[in-house]
Image 1 (cartoon, rainbow, N blue to C red):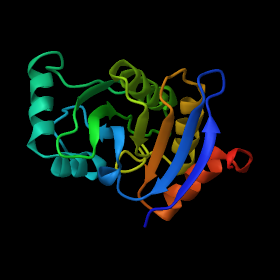
Image 2: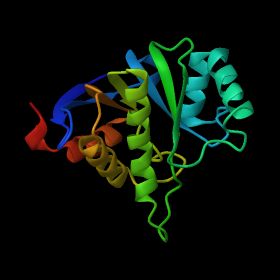
Image 3: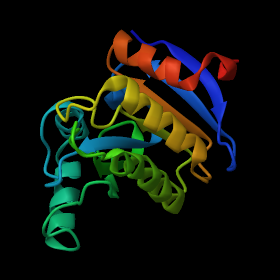
Length: 188
């Protein structure tokens, strides 16, 4: 089931329209789809596995080339890099490595960096619509409410030429967390 809710964000930057969608990120038609990748860039579970499966071998080949060239040791947490989108309905996949949540160490800056760096790469590529998953909130254990707050605040605070950010959320619970982070005042 897809459902959407729009909001305007972008404090101190270009106005970014924030849209919430409950559904499958691999079917989103956008300039860029963000992959919650692991550091190897070679596929994995969750969103990462789904993007690699549906995007086809072109994405894996591009990631393997990145590993042979600039990212021999993999992509560091909080960083982002782009590849072809292969067979996905997008121009690019922006791969970013989210942090594993810790109750002892504050890694929120690394999570925010995933969103900032992904927007920076989108700007470099001329992408104007970007679809994000809820980075680090799956197997990496980040609490959904806090992950949603960091995602929305970071997108709003990051200067970008991106016109629309879509948070594509797997289930109703994640959607509700992002809806709360967007806030009632911002919903048209």
